[in-house]
Image 1 (cartoon, rainbow, N blue to C red):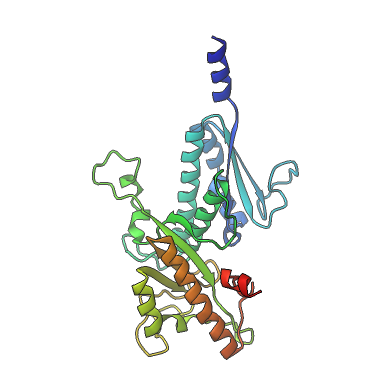
Image 2 (cartoon, one colour):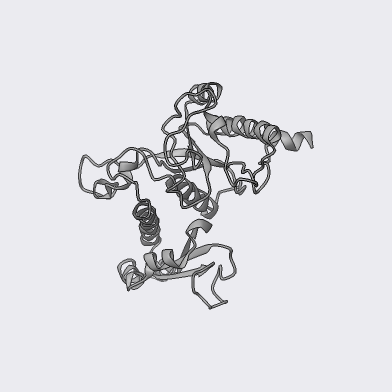
Amino acid sequence: MDGDDDNKMDDDTMKVRTLDIPVFLSTPEVTRYLVGNGKGKALEEEYECSIFITGLNSGSKDKSLPGHDLPHQLITMSGTDVRSLGRLRRTLEDTLIDYIIENTPTVVIGSVNPPPSLGRLLYHFGISASNAAPNTKDHRPDRTVLARSHFPFYLHTKRELGVNSSNPNHLPTKKVWMNIMELPRDESTGEYHGRFLVNRVCMNYYRNMECRVDIYGVWGGKSGEDDDGEDGDEQIGGNDLLCDPYVLITGSEKVNVDKCVQFIEYRIREHEERFGVERVGGRRMLRADKYEG
């Protein structure tokens, strides 16, 4: 009897889950979209938990709450049912995806091509989930992680056919290994450089690694041409970007994604030295750099 009571007490203990919101979505508008107009209260009732949003532009003035001084927003969810908290986190992730969809004017529902900002958001979700996992040993902010695939996009708009659906023909979004890389910027013109990453040599390398590489924000609103005058591989323009331009690398094998990251890093360094441009955060540290240092 006492053992049963102890187990019951354990089951009723409060569990906490968090979800980091990336800086480019840490705005008052996004906060209202998530929990404004009674939506936050409805979520708390549906999932039997409490929700707090703190950090940059959250509007929270309670300094006792975790994350009140963060340079981005943090959603803290607390309740007794860990499965319910997991479902709530997925719902909030889907809501942020919906925000990007609704704020990308040229997005085509049902298309395979995603909104250009979606990949950066999904990578952020992957990093946030990895950081929260108790067995995670690698906490580098730019590591390769498992994340929901951005492609094909229509899987993110057909959630009624998703994992929790009774529909036998559901098409859940798959998980892929994912990483992102920042692009160099010309301070004099404000232009980001990235077209050089889709020349023939680069594209052949990506294909040999069986990785998909998407470059966002350098095409002036339409498909561009690479350095050899060939069409880019369905690269998307920057007019619809809600974030800074970036490179998104995805694949089914982590080792191949990591190899592409290293390959692209060296190509970017060569371009920076040749054209006198640089990335805001500087070079990405590779393991080879540590050995050389």
